[in-house]
Image (cartoon, protein in one colour):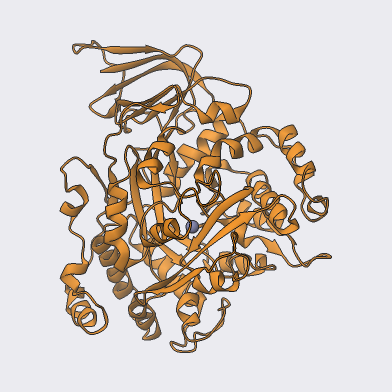
Length: 540
Ligand SMILES: [Zn+2]
């Protein structure tokens, strides 16, 4: 048993105020204070230290074919000091060295799921999990076009989650990636797909309902249409209305928050969206904050990546492809520049969203790694949220028009440590429906992070004193000392097994791989017998 004594505990799920107290770890879990201790006790005096649960990243591209292709497209070292895409080994260790103990790969194309799992298995220390991308594959679009029953769609969604051993469902530019193959360059919410005759609104509504009725722990994870397009705030607002009160998660909201007004036809729509979300408690979001510097953008949203042709930095051909007829893939190296009005305004818009969305339980910290910035920039982002004068100093370095077309300069809010614990831990776990993560109560996984207080939050969050993963000390003084296997978080939804009567011939006719080979068996997730599988049945 381990006793963490007298630390200052930030555990927003259980208390809105920090408190000084003890935490006990045993058999990989946090346990209640024992009445008497019969086992050897390892004790750490944490007086004056900050204690939080392990942080969780709910949207970070860390594994799978697209990530691997991006690594090939921009190998480490090609640009000096460039590390936007660490190896699997460095991914787990770098996350752990910031106090993260779990990260979710948000874009698993069904036929690439096995590859994504192999890479996730290779990521040490942190637990992982994946979201399966649906809503652009012929099978589902045909079901919707044929007005299939809600039960048929639910069975298909649940079967896909089981077959790909993923945790949640994501939709990317609903129907729009597929429409691109039929030469439609974009698909607006009520615009019909030229082949199926159905609209993104229908795809979104059918998927949102299916996920809701299946009682999945995480609501539908939505990458809305018109990613990065000036004026897209209107389609994002319309998308929120289309959900008709059902819960959903809007991802990398910053890339969907642009007005098309002003001298440059590009202005912040963050206030409009924040007002809307402040009235929709059933909605959660992550930001997809942009930071300045070199990165690589990668997305299943082929039409939007294709539209960005010519903006690559360094100048080199981008990668665009179809992904097994189930989605797409676009990859392009990209540099966000301080002196670019557009990039600087994107930076400001992300921060506006953080500061204008009032309830920290609704908003999750993300850079959509590596799209807005590498995840290694989180401590810097936290400083921008916690320190208004630092934020305004940074704003002063940017093109003056940024202040004209966003209200960032006037926002006085500063995040507290407790609010940081919400947007990086407790709220993320709540958004994901994970009851055993993101908090420090009995029954939670023994993922605990200890920080030295520091007046600069960037320093504080860059270098934890200790990180415990499943009750084992893995990071000390900001450095990994032990790299155990991470686990994988999956879900086991119920479905009618008869669905395979329809899927088997479809797979035989239209896919390169037979159905039984496509399905991933749970044994494949723990080949070496060391990797834990955390199963979640549904939201209770
Ligand atoms: Zn993403």
